Length: 607
Picture 1 (spheres, rainbow, N blue to C red):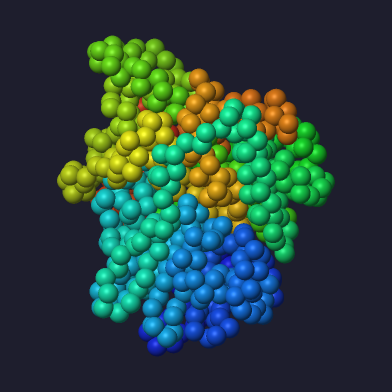
Picture 2 (picture 1 turned 135 degrees about the horizontal axis):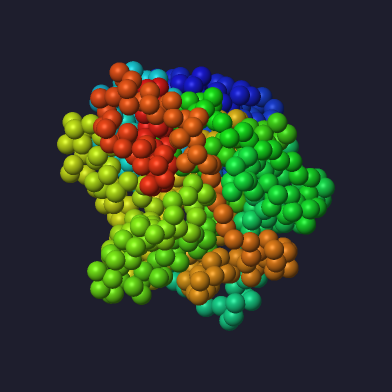
């Protein structure tokens, strides 16, 4: 199991086995790189043993508090602070942590295992309850599958989710019976007692209590202070540290803040682009780097990723087809040649209304009561008249997606704008046996259940909350974690400091989406720090030109998947060939659908 996690921790490894417990760890050394800080680690009293993936950013403050209580430390690591925090405070230590983490603590006295995951789900934790009692757990599914008791049966519900969204929601995993510990949950494992994950953080409640700021300026200033403190905490490192820079508002905000704590010339930034012009943001990153005065490096990736696609699918761990995984994977590899830690601007779009889908929500809120035939007629006209291009999320694509869901109830409409295959199309992809098995499942149910937590809130707050609990956790953070860890690079996400997340939830929606202006309050907070060009630059997204690739370098892989003995019984070959033909003729842009089929098929072949 630990060998399969070598990429997450190439610097050291260790195993602890005693009685009914076995703990293994691979270490990426970031804070206190000495061997004395390796894991598994035993606390000073000898009772508790920990394995821990992540960082506790406020560990120095916690260490001082614990020392006043009598704790003794022999390392300078955050791991030892976390271990002593649990020994003194038990599960309530989670309320004090500011960090990203998945960890396990074994209590030798009580023979009790404690598992916990950070509030936003930045670090993964899979587990499988064994039929004879006990549990097996790991940071990645590929490690968990090393245990012979873990089944390899495919989970139909996860397949339905993947075909709908191109990723799997955190309530499920691709393997039947394997679960993911949810964000902000802990689990206690004792012999003879049932397993019940326990939530320890309530984000929904923050959306219900709005902060009474005197004016926009006061709110913007409060946000700027929080961003700076979140960045400051995430600069702690005993190894080289840098940041990802796209040239947009989010990454530039983080880097401008970094430059207030260290010299710009000592701040290292990295970006990656593709040779296809509409997917290349390198020039924007360079302009932002010049404005900020940082030490910037960038690279342009070849348009042919066919040689790497199998390794990319393997690194994603589960079936995962967000096209931005490809540039993130390439960017992480490039940055790892210079640093061991990178700060990232992810999370701001979900917190401060950065996606066009929120504008669509607002428009749909006013259009929902229009006659349905009016919306249907508009959709028909769009399908006939708008050209099909393979550009990055062009206007014509957005119009089609909007009209496709505009006549639905609000929460269903919001979901529809994130879907890849419709309910019926998802079944058509599959061979008859699998289509029959999935006929009674609906991925929307697993998405919409989060709406119940905030059903009494503004419809945009509902959309923000559902996206934080699904899209952010199960797509964005999976991408960031797996792509960076594949190259032994640690990614830190300041916007997901839980204080910042709570602050954003407490803001009125009008400060996030003002009229049709996205991320309004974040822009206001950075007026003194960034140029107008950076602040008001249109969001382009961090994607890859897969619509081009599925008709060229990746076509052979798709053809092989629908013909291979290992996968052809899973897919409906004639339907996929129809998707390919439509795509090649320019009748429809099926790039995301075909890329999802490719990733699922390659994962099945590798499993």
